[in-house]
Image (cartoon, rainbow, N blue to C red; front, side, top):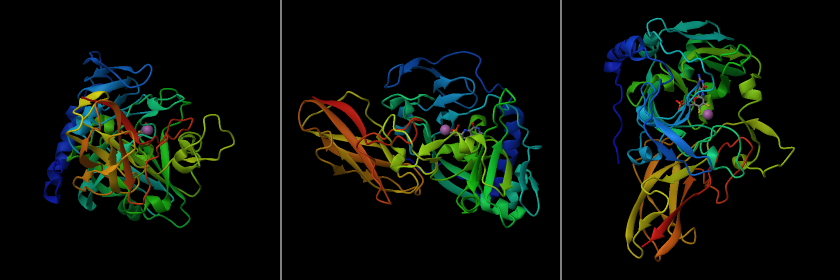
Length: 414
Ligand SMILES: Nc1nc2c(c(=O)[nH]1)N[C@H]1C(S)=C(S)[C@@H](COP(=O)(O)O)O[C@H]1N2
Ligand SMILES: [Mo]
């Protein structure tokens, strides 16, 4: 089980700012989209699942190419077997709008805080790193549509397999501390976040998201300037991104440069039209079900995966096999992980690895015995600290959000 990635202590914050400055000027002078070149292909487990691997994006190793512009890059699943922290160069990427700055000068970059505040702010990266207390938190960033390609019946959208998620140590400052410096005035309702990316057409709604003012001030939401001890990769939001622990990544605004305190509920397109889910447990409805109340997506639900076996792996029947994987509780920690060697007839407890905090991936391992030679199904199920278990039947909705069914892997006893 891997150790923590290097953290940034207060003494090294000064040199960290210098490192960001150097990166902004040089490291990102390339294009946000690759020129050409492929690193092979692979099959995701659904119809039309063929994808190319690309290692041509700035700051990224081999990634599953879902789309080039704006980039949608999926983490190859074997990366999750290698450690509890997802490396920055293998961390998935998702953007809505195609104009993504490729050159950001950290010396002139400013984070603005404005709207219903006493004192509007325009903060340099240096003042954020030096004048506010640094905070560290390990948290899973997962796209609302992670695993959408596995929905049955199929739904439209980015056809991800299970790799639109990652776990990192985030370093930054509390959003609350920044809001407090500006002084949120009485009557504030929402806090809206915007990044530097824009659409190509003027009519494309800018990608902005909001949190309720109490959530924004809860002390857990961070403005992060580092990921696993390094500046954020350009495509993961250099130089600043919002980290909203336990909530789907749509709220984790990248290249964050503008925070606006609102006196009205935010009714922009991305809050009121997009990223809505049925107001039912795990956003689950029947295909075709009408008249369902829709609400903005918010908290994540528990999930777990086997990482050291591929589908149709062969395991010795009647003898011990070690299996391992990752789990996360969603908006809270992992209470337990259960595995079944026989398609859910019997379940046994897995051993949990190091606890990196309730919003982190949790590694697990177990010794199982396949009952007999021949095909069987391994299953893994997480139960979170609130007692919420993954469902045995897949949850479904028309946007392909929040999939969290108990995972099944066909294997063969030999
Ligand atoms: N500025 C900006 N931030 C954004 C987005 C975006 O399109 N623009 N997409 C959001 C969505 S839907 C997801 S899933 C995450 C993806 O984060 P990642 O690319 O760092 O993995 O970024 C979020 N933050
Ligand atoms: Mo997303």
